[in-house]
Image 1 (spheres, rainbow, N blue to C red):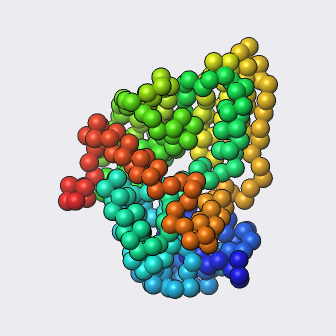
Image 2 (cartoon, helix red, strand yellow):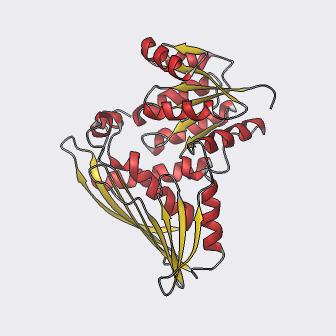
Length: 329
């Protein structure tokens, strides 16, 4: 890598701050620019995190040819338009999850990126973490026998956050929280799904506040997944096999993997390696792909992003949840 890899951040919310702090602690990368729709917010963010450039519009960041990668940290409803603008300006993109509001937007975005020859990937950070390899290796070792059942849950009391309650911002527990249990199941059990059943409860604004869905696989495996924005959960992922099971602590940010035998005795423990925040892995993967002239990351290929969006679309259809802007599409 010659010199520093310049990264720009689109958005100035909490998650943007975590990414900014992470980039500042990484080697070979530079927090070059930040953009907000309000110049004062960009200036404050730039002052806090040491950005060279602070833009009062997203368009200015996308037009800056010195930016090597743009991290999009805006509400779900804005991802499509923001990423499309970056791609049209030939700026590589690392876009926060959920990638878009629906599969139609995702497909259009990825088609455009391919036509333009521009890199884009989804920032679902658990896909890029080294602990995922550890989890797969433990299961693959046969220590728990044949894996047959999986459970995963994630819940936080975040229903007071406006963007999560607002249908116009693609709110609800599914796209913000449920995406993690879903990805966990797909990462461990794959995509050979035969049937999906689900249910949810609603906020007074009409988005899902709690949801539960089950993936039934063609080979008989079953994944039971839950997410909530009105209650805390233990954030655990458990994979049950014919000879034992593993417990993954925190499916939203892997911390450890405990292995139990058929006598419910713990026979193994794997701790997460030291990290900055966990965001660094998706940044490094993006840089590697860009330098190798690839348009996607192998950790989260475009086909998998589409798969996740289509499953979430099908769940929302079953629940009768349609975002206002989707009625116009």
